[in-house]
Image 1: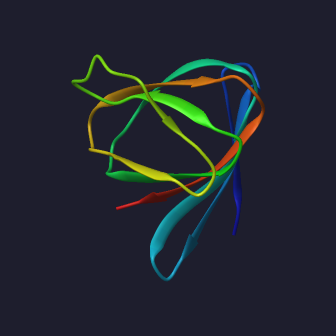
Image 2: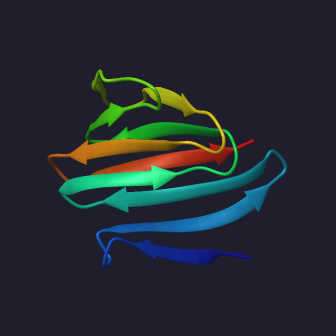
Image 3: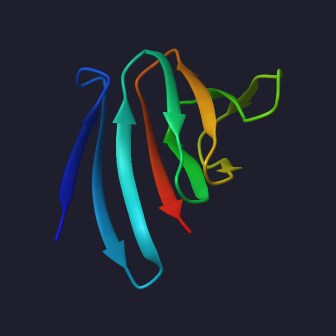
Length: 93
């Protein structure tokens, strides 16, 4: 069925589910700065708002807006800055 996840004192929440393509989360982030770790490859698409992202092994920050996707390799960490409430979809592979 569905699993509800909550991180960073409730500032990041997601709804996890599985479909024919695998594991997926749909989530929201409040204004703030976050660091996430991965255990699988993650394909993250911004669905509303925007995220400023620092990918692993990069000193550069890149902004991703609505309907833009970035990929994070497994077993790494990445940083996100959200300046307005933002939603996302993450597909795990």
